[in-house]
Image (tube, rainbow, N blue to C red; front, side, top):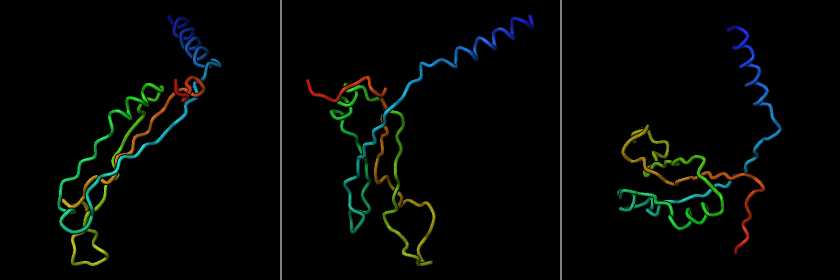
Length: 113
């Protein structure tokens, strides 16, 4: 039983050390909110929606989403005045959606058909 475990561990280690490494290329795309930070626009709800057609086109080119995140903004900065509230409050909203894409390097071509 002990020998079987040792052989299994070595087989796993040797199989993971192959020369068949994958290399990736990355692309970052940004979607920005449309509301202004000033005046009455700063009170409005802000939603950021990616372009479905653009994502579909990128998918056809071999790109897949590796990760995404929201960059947040404060609609009413306190400008260093202690009279204003600090910290995360209701005035924090999404400013920009960042999507990081990846695909295997050297496999796909961006040439149009």
